[in-house]
Image (cartoon, rainbow, N blue to C red; front, top):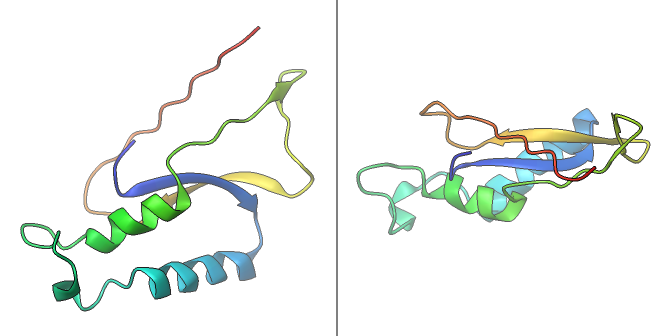
Length: 95
């Protein structure tokens, strides 16, 4: 639960993890920090943009007491700033 972190569902495959990092850095590069109006007190504008792209929450069905994923799906936490403590909130809604 922080504005520069993300939670998302995707395939747990090392090549894909690398592709995400490369793609996000191309879309919202950290340097030069002077390109962002947000950067002043902090230099994390790129982290805000990366989080916006990757999302802030996921909804997952639970069937028979287990997460109901497709065969390759997993939940991931994306850390785009790393400068402060974060927390995770899990809510279970339904029967």
